[in-house]
Image 1 (cartoon, rainbow, N blue to C red):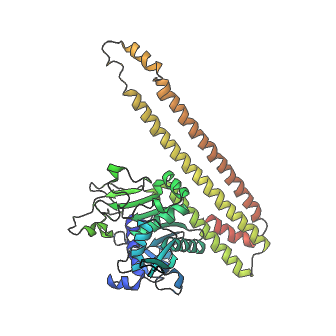
Image 2: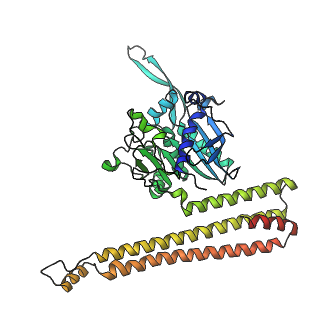
Length: 443
C-alpha cells in the first residue's frame, strides 16, 4: 500500500502530542507506544512502534526539546513493518528549547549543539559586563539522526520515510536527505543550510523523492524560499506550494496542518483540483522497493523460526537461508531492471514524439525572398536537418533502450540461475525443503 499525503499530515500532527503538556493544550491524550493513529480522510490506521521525548526521558544530557515517533500501517488487521514512517515534532511555543532551536539552528545555522543557559559576568578590573554560554546540549538534529538510526536498527528491512511539520519538517527533510530516503513534509523552512554537500547533491538529483508542501503566505514555512516563483530560491526543487483551502484572518492559520487541501484519495491538490506532489511514493519503482521489504521481512520471520526451533541454525538451514536471500535479491534486481526498461521505453516514445513535433513546426516557406529549397539549405548548413533533429535523436534514444534491455536480460538470467540453484538445494533435506518451498512460493 502507498502512504498518502493526508496520512503523513495526520502523523505529523499527532507527533506533537508525545509531549504531555502539549497534548493537554491540544485537548488530546499523550501519544504512547501501541497507540493507533487514524487518517481521517482515508481511514487508514497506523500503529505507534516507538516514541522519544527528550524533555521527559531519563537522559538529562539530551534535554533539547525534540520529540519523535515511528509508526507503521495496519494492513488486514496486522501491523505492516515493511514500511515505517519516522515523524519529528515541530515547535512547541511553550517550550524554550524549541524556541531556542528555531533561533540557533534554523535562524543561525548551528546544527551541532544547543545553548541552553547563559550567565552575565564582569570582566576583572573593568566595568564591562558580558554574557557567556554556560550550558550546552546536543542539537535536535543530532538527536533526530540518532532516533533514525535506532529505528533503522530495529527494522532493518523496512522502507523508511520521514515526515514532520514546521521545525519537524526541517528535521525530517535533513535526516531523509542525509540517509537517502523519501520525505513528505509540511510548511518546512528551507533545510539546505543544515545539509551536507553530499545530501544537497543527492536531493537535487532525486528531488521527486521529496515533497515539502507549503501553504502560500505562510511566512514561517516559506522562510528561506518565500516568493520562490519570483526569486527562484528553492534551489533543491522540493517545494510544492499550494493555496490554503480557505481564507484565514489570523496569518498563523496559513501555517497550520489543517490548511492543506486534499482530495478523496488523500492527495494534496491545488485550487483547480490538480495533484501537486511528485507521487514518487505511489510509483512502480517505489512499490517495487516496498515489495522487496515485504520479502525480506518474511525472510527474517523464517530465519527467526528456525533459530528458535533448533537452538541455532543447522548447516542445511543456513544453506536454505542463503539461497532464499539470494533469490530475493535476484528477483528484486530483475523486477527493478524490468521497471527501468518500461520507464525508459516510455520516455523514448515521449521524447521521440516531441522531437518529431519540434521538426514539424519548422516552416521553410515563410521567407518570401527565398525559395523553399534555399531555406532548407541555410538551415542544413547550421545542422538543422530532419536527420539531425529527428533520425539521429531516435537512434540515440534507441541505444539507451537497448542498453537497459541488455541489463534487464542479464538480471533475468541471474534470477533463472538462482532459481535453479534453489531447486538443487531442495534435494538436500526433504523436511526443510517442504517448509522452504511453501515460504518461497508465497513471496
